[in-house]
Length: 193
Image (tube, rainbow, N blue to C red):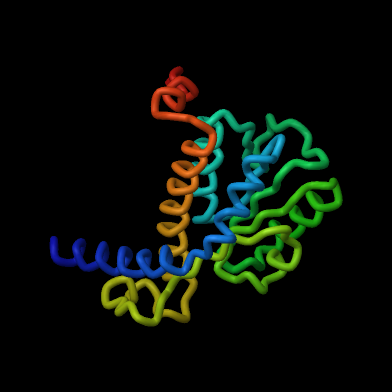
C-alpha cells in the first residue's frame, strides 16, 4: 500500500514540476502588480478550485490586504479599481463568467488563474496566470485511474495541487515585496478558535 501512496505523490509532483517550469515570469509579475495596487480584492471559484481560493483569500488577509470571498455575506461593495481574481481551470464556468462581467462593468480589474487562457474568462481578463497541468511527459499510472488525460477529474486534481503551490509562492513573493515576515503574519492570524 505504501508504494501506491508514493506513486501517486510522485505523479503529482512530476506534473507540478512541469507546471512550475511553464509559469511565465511576466504573468507572475503582473499578478503581483495587480494584487499590490488593488484597494480591495475579491476572489471567486467553484468546486475544487474554491478550496484553494479560500486559502489565497486567507493568506492575503494575513499579509494585511483586504481580500474577500465573493460568496460571503459580509463583504463590502465591489468598487471601481478593485481587483476580481477568478480561479477556473477551464475558464468556462458560467457563474464565474457572469461575475467577471459584473466586476468589469463596475470598473474593476479582472485577473484569471486558469489552464485555458483563450477561454471566455481569459477574454474578459486584464491579466492571466496560466497554470498548465496534465503534461504528456507524465505517466499517470495511478492517478490515471480517476481519469486519463481526457477526463476532468485528473485535471481538477492536478490543477488543485498546482494552485496550492502557486498560492503559497505568490504569498512568499508578496511578503518579501511588502516587507512582511512570519511575525507580522502571525499577528493577523485568527486566534479565537
